[in-house]
Every structure is written in C-alpha cells, then in structure tokens.
Image (cartoon, rainbow, N blue to C red):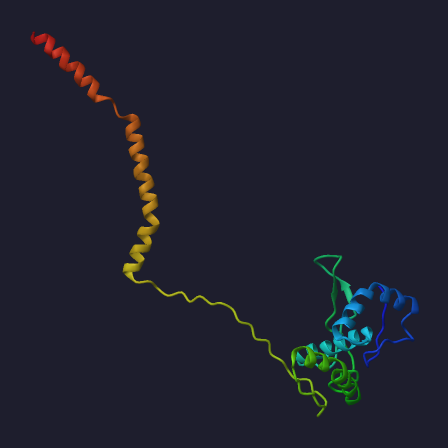
Length: 211
C-alpha cells in the first residue's frame, strides 16, 4: 500500500505524503494519467481529479444516508463467532465534525465548485453537448433522519375452488396410479401360466381316447 494523503480541498498533502510514495504512485499510474489527459485534451492534475472525485462522491453518498459527518467505531473486541473478525462496540461511537463537509463548509464548496466549472463541466459540454447548471451554496446541509425502504415479493395464500382442487389432486395422483397399474400388469405377466399349451395337449389326449 502506498500512502497518499489529501487535504480537505482535494489536493495532495505534501507535508504528510512522502516524496518517494508520490513518485512511486506516479510511475504506476503513468498510463492512466496519460489516458486521462488524452481524453480531456489538455494537461490535467490527476491527483486533483482523484481528490475531487472521491471526496465529492463521499459526501454525496453520506448525504444520501441523511448524515453530514462520519461516525467511526474504534473499540474492537474479539468476535465470539470468528476470532479473526473483530466486532465493534457500538456503545462508544466516535463522531467527527462536519467542518470538512463540502456541503456544510462554504469555502470548500466554492473550491470544489470552481474545479467543477473549470475542468469537469467543459469536458462534458465539449464531448457530449451537456450544459449542466452550476450548483450554488445556500445553507449548510443539515442531518436528516432517513428511512430505508425495501421491496420484496409477497405470496398470499388463498383457498382453491373444488374443481381446481380436484384437478390438482388428480394431476398429483395420476403418475402414481399409472405406475402402480403398470407394475401390477408386469407382475401378472410374470406369474401367469401358459394355459394355451396345456389346453392343446389335453385336446390331443381326448382325441386319442375317442379313437
């Protein structure tokens, strides 16, 4: 794992990121950086694009859950089910501030909005003709209680009519009865005596007696 640290503005934290880590990451991502610059048809700061993308989607997804700040659980205790899987203590959550939330911090919002207007939107407008209106900051985004809706298939059992029930029972019993009938026929053929031959022999004996 290569440690790369970002600032709340989406730029690389030069103070915390080792130069060797950044150089190694640039070498590994060189083909991707070249491909992105070819797509945008201009020099693009790949790390700024990474930071803007991941941070923006992080706060958007968190807002979908009605939250404006992350919550972590760091008190891990051994799991009773599997010792290799830590279980968290939900009685002592660690709640962080929403100061770095781009939807709560107006200066951060303007920074991300500026990058969106200067780099992201022109690409979509020139490539696909999309003219997306620029979002504006009104008020800090408040946390909202969120309800999750789940859909599922439900089967309601209702009593069947007599005619339908009769056909259903017949459809179930017919293969069984047909199989028993064929088995009985086969057994009867196996144990039946050849009466035709004995009757022919008896007829010859009677005919010889009368002669």
